Length: 442
Image (tube, rainbow, N blue to C red; front, side, top):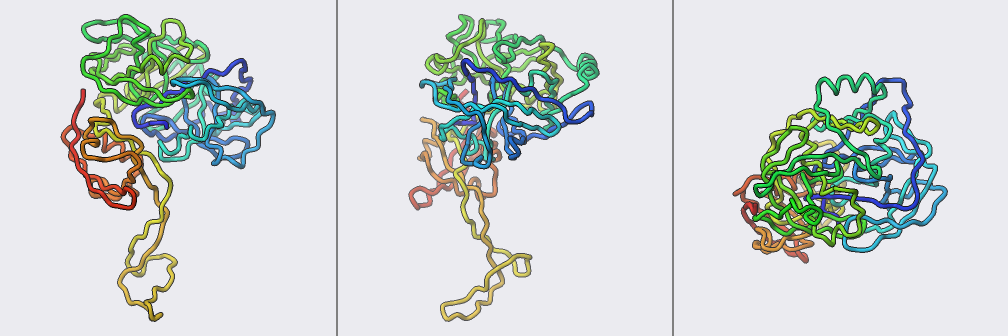
């Protein structure tokens, strides 16, 4: 199970093969703009693979382009397919996959006609239910390697600059530049961390596919200590299984002169990272909870990152205080009443004697999303309220769950301390009411 509410991190190791494609502009314009959806700090972009419309997670933390959710992509034709093994974060061994070459992948005015795709066969590895919209794959290094890519989190737009020299002039004037190394096709930057009275430099993976603020690997540096106040949590899932660890606040985090007070850091346990080849001196990752506070530019060719403060720079660092994680659980038919005269196609309603029923209201049936509780953290407010895994969410604070998006539900569960949450769930055909107050653990 993948839990995007708190984090997702995907570090991919694929040996010994390397992609050979290259994205090119199909227009003479100086830049192209690609809109994206931002869900739980993750960037979802529309794409077209071999003529089929899909959604991809944009992720600087992966080397290759990955496809999953095959039941949603039956129309895609693949050629030159061979078996491979995939491995990443998690406690288990590598998993089986496929590699397909000579694919055409398009992002608006960008296209690559010789793109390698790595296909995950494990159907449990599916992002869609945890994000609330269809997500069919991940793209990383191949998107960034030859492009000057600007990510404007405020406007939710990606700008790929074809006239790179002119754009760099602007970024050098108006943004803060940070040196960046590219190692094994991933970007790394050096930041400053203050924790438990110690201040130290930390080489971190710049990972926009990780929804948390900061991950720190306690096992990789004597300078990193677990904070006094923490709680155990399920941090996410990689290709090699579940990732567990602790969450706690660090004193400060500094990136290119920008300082954040008391951000929340995650500390993965040693078994979750044992299968990952960590580059020299790396001690963790920077994720979307930090990057969403900026207009960010990745310049892989010149080994630079540029940052400019965004509208959410001073936003507080929240986390899920309820103790429950919620996921999309499919669709359900919902019966809703509407006033007569509304524009809709309806059957005539008859009583048991086949007489027409006079009514001031009519009904329509529509498919609406259904949500369920995917996990309950022990000793949390939700656990104390007797909520359980697989409970179907019916209402939250008096509002029907199907009228909310998964992102809206997650925002409620991450809101202010002391807020009362009233939930109605269905469990084995019975409706159960529960309520609790959000409380801080950190």
